[in-house]
Amino acid sequence: MTTYALTAVIHKEGNLYVTESLEVGTVSQGTTIEQAVANLKEATELYLEELPLVGSAPPIVTTFEITQ
Image 1: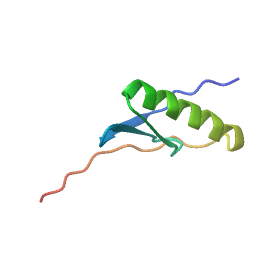
Image 2: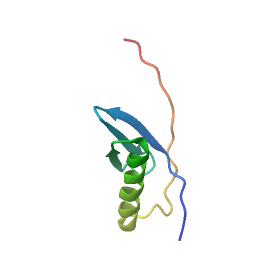
Image 3: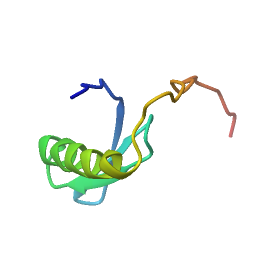
Image 4: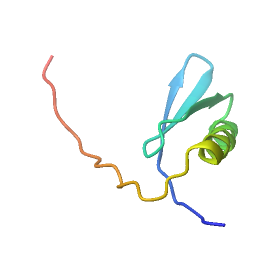
């Protein structure tokens, strides 16, 4: 069994916290940050049962600026 360290982005929408895995693209939500991350972990584990990460390149994460 392989262990992966994945990155989650978390933001609040109304009363829920929405989480997204940058590497996999899975998304979940919860009423607390802890619940949202736990739900994302479960969703990602289920996803990876069907489509493993073996051989995939890590994503490139960057920042950018906009002016409004």
